[in-house]
Length: 555
Image (cartoon, rainbow, N blue to C red):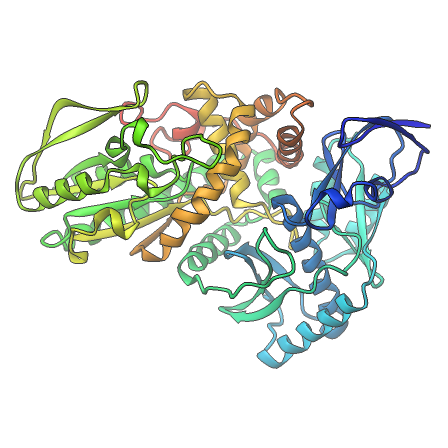
């Protein structure tokens, strides 16, 4: 008999081979949605996973971040199965998320609207029949042999198998006779996948799916073409240079060719800064305020500084302004329901004072700039004055910079709005993508450890609150942007591995939720070859997070 510690802290004995689903039946009523997956000793598994040793068990409900990820992976598998039956010559590629939807393409044989409707109906049929999604462990040899037989997924899957630690169990999933590898668990059946729709979009379609809080309700999908174009550009470029999957990046690193990829990636970003600077210079008579916004760890500050360099090259006098200095005093900061300070809301900014200063600057007046003391939580004035000259342009950076309230006193013709985010084009294979939010979390974790005295435990704990604020206050403003700038670098997962792995290993098992996230990120990073940072130029956006930036004083 096995001794298993349960979610309620009690220990109970179970026979070897008991599944997580069998254990979970006693706890289902404690969740507000069905169980999507299980956790055993900090790692995520299908509920069909059989326990063969002592350990600790937990569960992931459908209405959670990880539960919805399992929902989407399972829905993707249904799409793959339906497509293989109806259109066997068509191969699906999962590209990126667009809000609560997944953008997919069919590079070889695109489907027309009528065929797409047939695909949707077939998926509905598979779901209505409540087919089981069977999971089973496979030996490394079997996994390698199957990968070699698959002309579509083979090379990428084979490379992932070779990178996975020898101690890690590999799993295959089967639905309606179709077997595919997924690197994270799926649901145990199609029963709960009823809320979805396929919508034609750009060069493919989106799978619209529920938001996290209600897996049964399908929200209307808002077209977000600007962000999708940024994703497409990154994917096209990474495919063009042969570095759009982890296996290809790993090969480049092993062959000693990473320096070239670094130079090209950095050169592409510099070209974009030059393009933006040329536009601003050409419209210098009107454009006086450059607004740069984006979510946490998107590289706003480095983007600000690099744009300023290019503006100076063009003979302008850029003046950086950080919106952080316009925070209200801590005692006036909005609070969460639990009494903690909510630094994600736009009301943390003294909007009235900020608009007053912008108006005065536009009219040629001099203003006394505030300085926010993060230690005391109070606004101070240290004698810094600012005014606009003939060749001045103010470059304003802050997470809420594109919120219309923040600059409502300034005419649109005097503003250029730039939204920056780190949209990784990197995938494991055609079905398994790397989540952009995971890469931003790794960026923030490394930065917080090196410069803000926060360990991985602190950063991971804070992340859900940060993400809620982004979804509510930052991402709704991204379509306001005149420019959408992607700060992701194709090689950065290999750099972040070196810095993040030691941090993630410090998260203790007793911190259950945080430990689970750390384990998941470790599994991802172990699939990537590490890369030394020596070849990275000191003005790289990535240096903002790992250290050694040429803009260190400004950062």
